[in-house]
Image: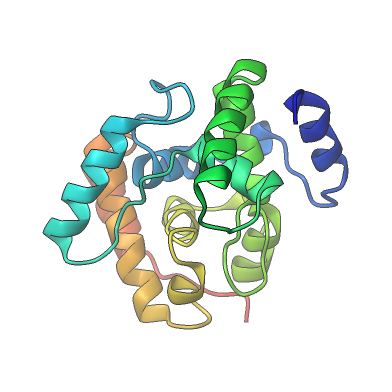
Length: 202
């Protein structure tokens, strides 16, 4: 693939529930950055510092809390690539990530990510996930609900609240802590989000 822009536009047109960035809550966007790729606004598609940090965090936690791939890399994987673990596919992923960064700004990439990522329980994209889990449009989500959704893509079949609400809640608390640490929410907002009752659609 030599020109990523028309390919991305074709993908957008094929997504029936595509939501533009202005309809996605600030707290959901920043929750994803806080827990998936804290250097998202600084790197240019891939992040060696982020990979090293993820290794340290995961070893200290005794479980996988952070992945090494950037949001940009995850986006090109979602849109264009198979799950094959080969050097050729990884090289293609890095090339496409750089190309995506050259052709789209950070908000556009985040918009693509949130519309293409798998949230578990057969929900693809933020609108399906918001409606499927909470019976709401994305714009109507609370901070607590944003944090729960943001925690799912890391391991969607494990953290889906329909599979295990306990695991989903524990993951949500990790996200809330990350949001507070990054300054996305205040300590008061964090505490309120931690104790908010989550009511699922089913």
